[in-house]
Image (cartoon, rainbow, N blue to C red; front, side):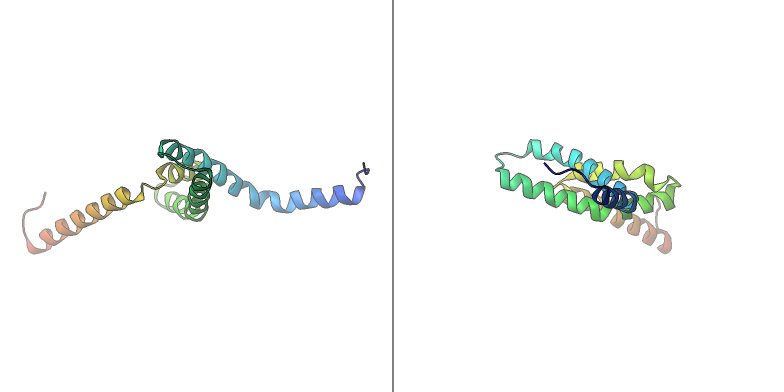
Length: 128
C-alpha cells in the first residue's frame, strides 16, 4: 500500500478549504430533501428500485433548485435568516414529493378569491 504523500494531503486539504463553504449548504439541502422525500416514497404502492431512485433524484434535484429561492423569500418577508430556514424548506419540498398539484390548486383558489374580493371592492360591492 502506498504511503500518503504530503502533496496529496495538501491538495485534499486545499480542496476542502475551498469547496467546503460552498458545498456545505448544498449538502444540508440534499440530506434534508432526501429525508423529506423518504416519507412519500414509503407510501407509494409497488415501486421498483429504479422508480424509487428516479423519484428521489427528481425530488432532491427540485429541492436543490427551489430551496434557495424559497429561503430568500422567507428571509426578505419574515426576516428569518436564510441559513436557518434552508433545512426546513428543503425537508418540506421533499415531503410534498408528487403532491404539488393540490398545493398549486389551493394557491390558485386563494389567488382567485383575492382577485374577486379586490374586484368587488373596486365596484363598490359587498366585501367580506
